[in-house]
Length: 321
Image (cartoon, rainbow, N blue to C red; front, side, top):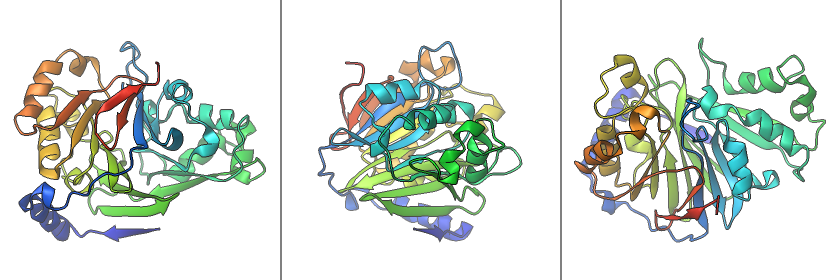
């Protein structure tokens, strides 16, 4: 496991260099037809959108490998997707807003009834005054003095397995590109701009295939320009419309035109939009038009349970079928 420190000047130079090189020059061919991503939740924090809150499942030959975020309702769709807790390599969190993490206790409780017998890494961002770092976040939920002390065995090692929380640097002022290998996969993360909240973008790779999840971000620091380079599927959160003028919202989330710019400059093969809210749900044609000004690749608006192949970048089914 290691991380690479990118000084601000070096980081800017890297972005400029990437922008000058055609995407196809570095593209690797995805050869693993068994890799896909299931949209466990395509909504945000609203309870009137008929969507589960944000969550994604990366599978290999139908087996659950990684969960990225696990908002309210994601646990139900994890079951629908045929997910088995014992198969998971790790849980990855972009940040700890409720709509990205609320079903974690449900997963931990359900694991008691699974056959899992190996420790489960939980990767997430470092903290600040607004939210605790990942180990403390987990401790405050499942520790002996936490919200669910009856589940503390999953921290002490007295259960069949233990949660192993790992904090990944989320300092957006001095971004570090984190990288580690796990279960034959390569995991990468980088800090992203989401207001005061420490947040990460995540990328999962194997056999030349990759999926990148933006997390909630305005991408003011342009860190996604590095993380999403030549990705097969770029899952981009569409929480604000192109017409947005709220300065606070624009510090938290990126406009569709920024999604299109990222997809174009990184050479993303496919863009899957997710994390919809009422303000974006009703303006999909305008969103598509804004993205199409710069990006002409595959573009999809996710629904809960949609399944996308990393090899083709296209939807192959639904876990509701």
